[in-house]
Image (cartoon, rainbow, N blue to C red):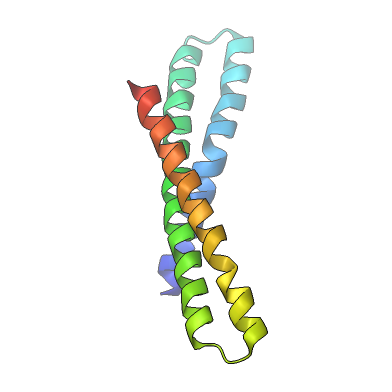
Length: 112
């Protein structure tokens, strides 16, 4: 299980950082006058699309998890303050799901 979590963490970090690194390499290649610069720019655009897609999916999955955790805490915890705090997680989780869906809709309309 730890290996799976580690792989997922490295994958998410790579998705977040790779477009920025490739953009820096594009600027360097463009300044040096290399012909590969145009290909690097199109690859950067593709990586940014993957980043948007990954961000939308992570927001949806994370939001569902937070909402489920809030529902579980509101139904199973004993002190009333803990139940109230858990119930406050539900709207936050649903808000994240809404934002993830909005990102995926914007991503799909940009492809068209």
